[in-house]
Each structure stands twice: as structure tokens, then as C-alpha cells.
Length: 87
Image (cartoon, rainbow, N blue to C red; front, side, top):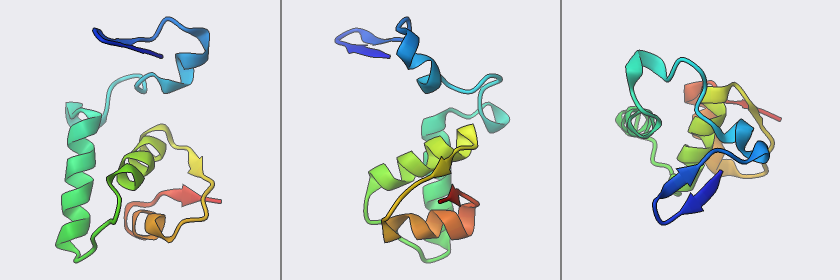
């Protein structure tokens, strides 16, 4: 994926793993909307994530069914309440 002033180009061979999953996301919602939905769901449970990038990273792994290798307690709510797999 190559970032330009005009958007993002996916024509690089190393960018294949960064493309959205086939078939889109649940209920046709964009990844951004899913991040917001997951954030609000955690907030309703009384959980606040300290860093937005942690939720975005967790969402990326959830959508693509990746396991997350981390050493950061900020991912624990996403692991516990959203089913993120971690190593």
C-alpha cells in the first residue's frame, strides 16, 4: 500500500496483506464504523481504552482473524470482551 496525496495505492506486492478482507465487513459496515461500534460497546461496559491506535490495531486483527503478539495491558479489554486472540 502506498500512501499518496490522492489516496492509497494497493498495487505493491507487499501490500496484499493490508487490503480489506474479501466480502467486506459485517453488515456492510466499513472498518471505521466497526471501530466506532466496538469502542462504544466497550464504553457501555465501563471500559475506556487509553489509546485509539490500540482499538484500531485490535480491530485490524479481529477482522482478519490474526493473533496479536503484544506486551501491552491496553489490549486486555479487547481480548476479554471482543474475543481478540493474543500470544
